[in-house]
Structure formats: structure tokens, C-alpha cells
Amino acid sequence: MAVTDLGPNDAWLDDVDRMVAEGISSFKIFMAYPNVLMVDDRTIYKLMERTKQLGALVCVHAENGTVIDAIVQEALAAGNTRSALPCAYSPTTAEAEAVHRVVAISELAGGARSHRPRLLRRGHAPKSRPARDRGLPVQGETCTQYLVLSSKMTWASPDSKMRSTFSLRRCARRRIRLRCGRL
Image (cartoon, rainbow, N blue to C red; front, side, top):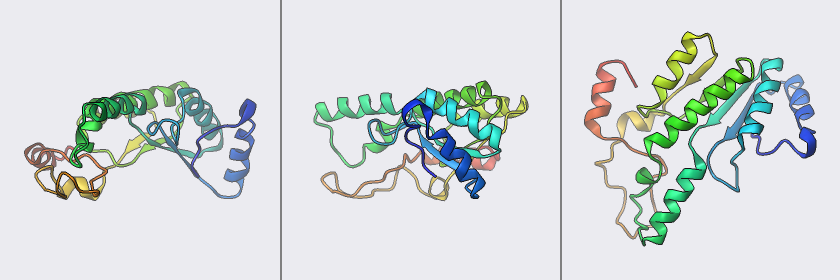
């Protein structure tokens, strides 16, 4: 179940209780896509507090959406509209900061369970490992395309309407991390 808002005076938190009672065990939130899906830190905290009480899981799309939006706007203002740019629009640091923030909010909410899908960036593991070592139930996973695709692949011509929506990393770094068992 995706959560984008808790309603006036957090009234919809009671709906979370009902949904869990009906069998829904996880809730998806986005820290990206301002004015569309992005939730603020207060919403993350309140949802995590409630899901902690209920034993439910919060799945988090962890990227600093506000900063990424500013980077995109700057690139567009500079006339940079090439289809290969999504990698540059979503720097590793924007994900690492958001992962750190969601781990901290999970801890503040009493150790709420959280899961971050589609991660492969270097900044993720250093934020989650110490949290798990402290007993926090935080986890993350990658996607298959991060393991087999690279930034050296050409998706389309610069004027194409088609583009990759995920950030591909350099081949050499990915191979080294896979050999060492570290994503």
C-alpha cells in the first residue's frame, strides 16, 4: 500500500491499523518525486511509529527528492536535456543521505522495520550495516539490472524519447564489488 499523506490530523493512521488487520503487511513511501509522491520526514516518522506497533514493514524509495529536483531544474535551465542524463540527475550522495535519514528516523521511531529496494550505490551499505549491528531491522536490496547493465551501454540517440530511469554504474567498480561479495 503506497502512502503519500496521512490526512488531516493524521486521521488516516487509523486506516493503517485496519489495513494491517485485513492482511496488508507493508507500506511503500517515496522520499523522491516532490509534489507527486514524496512524503516529508514527519510522515515517515509517524508511519514508522505506527508500523512498529503493528509489526508491519515500511518500504522506502530513498533518494533526496528535493535536491535531485534542484539538480534536474539546473540541468534543464542549462539546456541539458539529453536522454543519458538520469544517471547524473541522481547522484550517489542523494541516495546515501536519504538512506542515512531513513535509518535515523527508523531508530527514532523505536526500531521500525524498513526496507529499501533498488539499491546498489556505495553509500547504502555503510549506512545500514552499523544500524543492523545496533539491532535495527533495516535492510536493502538491489535490482538485477544493476548487476548486468552498465553505463557503457547506449540506450538511444541523444534526441530519443526513450531513456533509462535507473542510474547505471561504471563496470569496473561493480565487478570489484561483486567479486568481493559487496554490493
